[in-house]
Image (tube, rainbow over all chains, first blue to last red; front, side):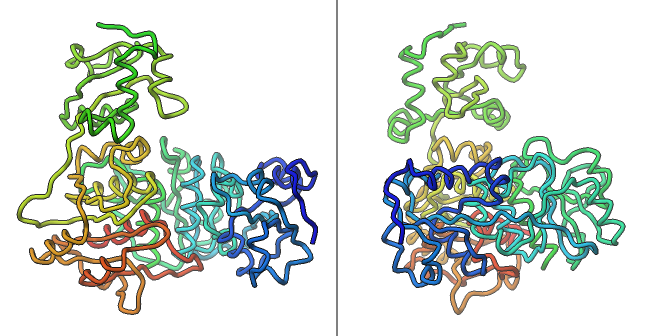
Length: 252
Length: 252
């Protein structure tokens, strides 16, 4: 097995660049960090392009079938590749494959309209995964799915959920044309308490920007707007929390 | 009005220290940053000990009654006091008053057992506030309520919810003795889907550490353990997301 001791090695420099969207798109790959996330990829049957691991991982049963694509790295290299303060010492170069929408739209969709915080985006995808949502659509202004902070918060849900980047206004029209009701989550005079909509096998739920809410045009396109009645004195909920409450109701 | 231009001013040095738990306890005060959070404090009728503001805030109507305790600061001082990369230029020294439990325990309680991430702790308190929970109890190993990152994620909910620090094992006994059912959130063979417990005006809900879950002894003390059935392939939910789903059900 090849061993790389120096962070200045060309392969390591190239791998480090795969935390950046521009280089990810060029190389059609992204860098995944940490044992738990690499484990999720392998369990989901997604084959890495390359694995970089310190010696403490070399005896892991799960890695054995991948020895021919594994490179041992020094702790110094691990520190260089890592985006976290205390790296675990294992990294995978994963194929960055954009998801796509099927021609006939059906099922349950979560639509992200300008969700900027990577932690929120990752948590939204993880939550959608747990609720059994098939597709999460990344609209304009939403943090990229392969941003290192999004990857951390997703906890491997990119291997379970179809992640698609698409302009939301056209998609909402397509969903409605396909008979899939689209719900907004913006408080307005016509908004319904979310508990008044029955759980259903088909819907699109849109959540909007942390500070500014949903785009006004997109809001007008929705069939119904839902809100979560607030019992205490909080002004609002975190966007991932609000999505979770509504999604677990709609998929109950 | 006094004006402070230099970050080396003794008052500014003292205010900056109020982001740190040790000095917060000594001074019985904490530093709150940003217009929205200061606004929440004033709206809730909590009087700051001191306000520091750049000139752009000096005409705010809400601040007028507090001119005698307001000091104008330079943008340089604002940058020094700030914990955020793009400070808004307003800070309040707030009284740090520990909450207390009433002698007769009744109502709805959220109990935090070793929640380490400040963002999670703040989001949990904000979510509890929105769900109308009266008291959040900070057990051992939980991030401090006045940690700057907790304050940011709480979004002012410390002014709406009773925040108490207390050892959870004794409290759980007291709740049970008072007839308040205590629910855990740890998946085990006896755990019930959360939807099988009816909403109620009285309960304690315990959420556990992000990585290790609830303390085993505490788990044995609970009346019932609840779990959220996972429909997709996510292994688990973020702790604040899980708490939100259960709390909005129990308070429906």
